[in-house]
Image: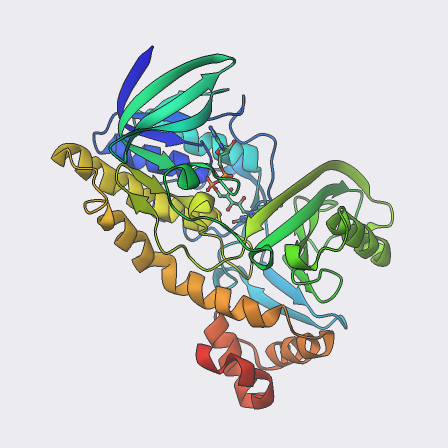
Length: 395
Ligand SMILES: Cc1cc2nc3c(=O)[nH]c(=O)nc-3n(C[C@H](O)[C@H](O)[C@H](O)COP(=O)(O)OP(=O)(O)OC[C@H]3O[C@@H](n4cnc5c(N)ncnc54)[C@H](O)[C@@H]3O)c2cc1C
């Protein structure tokens, strides 16, 4: 059996579904292939997203996938100093805490409504190539193997992406550019119901602890640490357990589920397209290196990808040269921020608890209009110029 589509998408996460929606809506025949038997499940996510960018990727806000809404972000320094910021200015991961499985299914439903087909429990096991150009994928569907030909293959296969490598794009990550995470959904606890919390310091070496409320007595409580700082297998869980024990609010806590996973905290890739192939979302290393959040960027890049691919279908041209419109399009929207945050992350992971205390105290005292690296450094520079010396190239 050989199937044929204009566009075949590997992975039905946010990147895949938004790419599928925009490509199909603009006239492409699209097949999205997902290895899991259920889209969005099991969840591997802190489930924090901001409200403000959702509608810009063609998805209406929907109560069905919003678990809880918060006022903003609370950043806590190692000595307990708190800095709070309104959700509209707190970045792309703060505002709503979602039911990620329902969210991913909703995005896939939008893709299907636009005309995309979806194939579940089917794993892409390799790429088809002709004279170096990618021409489709080989699929394993519960032991049955078949090929799907396509004008363009989209690697939307997440952090553990293989599609890029198969296509000759270097997506290798160094240990210092990976955050390894462990999270519990806990109930019978007392999270601050108004804020998504980010707790900094050596509790989470090279990362942070998050508490994202999913209700008044329930929250996602997780920890991410830089892989290069892991000494023993199981360290993320060990550090998280130690943190939970130290925080009174969790003393009666019961665990409803556990999640482990990883995110890239690397600089953006040099290349995300080749002849007949593009990468989108985590597969293209589009995660913010400071927050570890990637849903917004996956959706934004997916929209660009879908729109460009639909044009390529009409022109019957999927060459790397033609696909530069995607390469330039996503970079114009998010590359500068990704790069700046990666550079800042390189320095942040070296700071002591005392320095974090000073930074958060300054932010709490002076405030900052919008939470981004440049604004934060400007505020700190005014009060503690010595603290920003190392970040001079970011100012
Ligand atoms: C613990 C943790 C907490 C996080 N918290 C947040 C957060 O609070 N906010 C935020 O914005 N981001 C968060 N992220 C990051 C966020 O989850 C990702 O950025 C987002 O999922 C990227 O979407 P994607 O579509 O690129 O990849 P994914 O959502 O990973 O989707 C990839 C899909 O491809 C499928 N797939 C893989 N290989 C194949 C194959 N060979 N064949 C077929 N299908 C395949 C997978 O099954 C998967 O469904 C977190 C990540 C982790 C690990």
